[in-house]
Image (tube, rainbow, N blue to C red; front, top):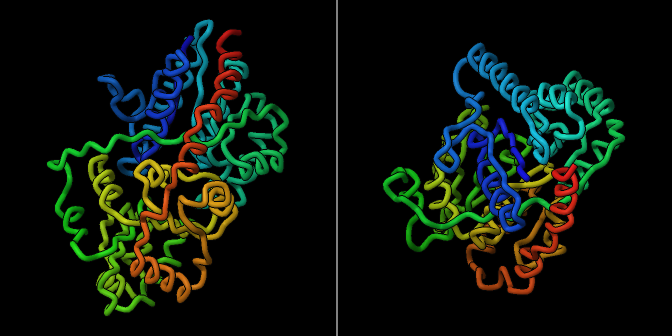
Amino acid sequence: MKIYLHDLIGIHSGVNYYLDTFVLKMAKHNIDVVIKSNYNTNDNNPYYPNIFKGFKLKRFFLLLISYSKFFYSICKLKKQQIIIVSLYGTYVDLGLILISKISKNRVLLDVHEVVDDNHKGLLLTKLFKYSYKFCKNIVIGHSNKVIQNLSQFGYLKKVVFTPHINYEIDSLINKSNVNNDVINSFSNGFVHFLFFGTIIPSKGIFNLLSAIEKLSLSNNKIRIIIAGKDRLYNITNYSNYNEIEKKSKLILRHLNDDEMKYLFKNSDYLILPYLDIAQSGVLEMAINFRKPILSSNIKYFKDKFSKYPSFGKSFNTNDPANFAKILESESKNNNQLNYYNDKDLDRYFNPEQFNDFVTEIKSHLNR
């Protein structure tokens, strides 16, 4: 029995942690999973090119190559082999959904997001509605938001639900791979709050910047670290950039695995002021490193902390003064020992949550 796990995003947005953890969890159930993505896995070269590097014409050409490789992979599937392809609600998905139609019983769609809020537009939304309305492939879903959106788009086939996979990331760091701007972000005597990930409006970056403006420089215990690609120049073009630069540490670039681990390991809190989300890999990273989470009060986070209250807290991040007040309060108390109790951790990492999903996958492999 074998699963081929296809993912075109991969290392571009840290999805490699999800894919690697998926392989580990399936191995515990004696299911062999081969990753087909854009990074090296188990000494194997990347199957797909990184379609996000280079000028537009080059990226388009690489996308066409990726679609052809995906098509070829489906054509050469054997008995007791299936493909699970990851979808994130971007324009990249449209070709993958279309190609998947050639084998509706052997290709499952792992839908992390139906339409990404940062790519949402009238034309794209219409194309996704059409794609899912006539889609015959079974979908794997990880959130109520995804299931509801699929229903609104007219998707009529089966949705196999499983919680988002809990990351299993080791804490080993090769410090020679960690650049000085990351290392110098930390100083003794400070409480460090980390915002990590691609810097885009839907992740509430402007709410965070407004809160930073409200922080008093006299409160020298607070240090905000913003780390990730600012590909839309949301921070560098911010009207009050100079004050943001004074009151925070900015690492506006792609960070490698060792730098990511260094940031998570040394930070005191993770900040997630997202405006909307179906699921969050950064939240899973925070839990993996047992870092308290301070989030917006959208339903996804409220539900999470209602179930696992010791993992963090949600609050109104739309109010800059309130946001800043929460950060200042946490920095003064720094009650990290009150977070992540054993009861919540035992329930969160309960392997039984994954068993029903594995049973469903085995039924497809045995066909």
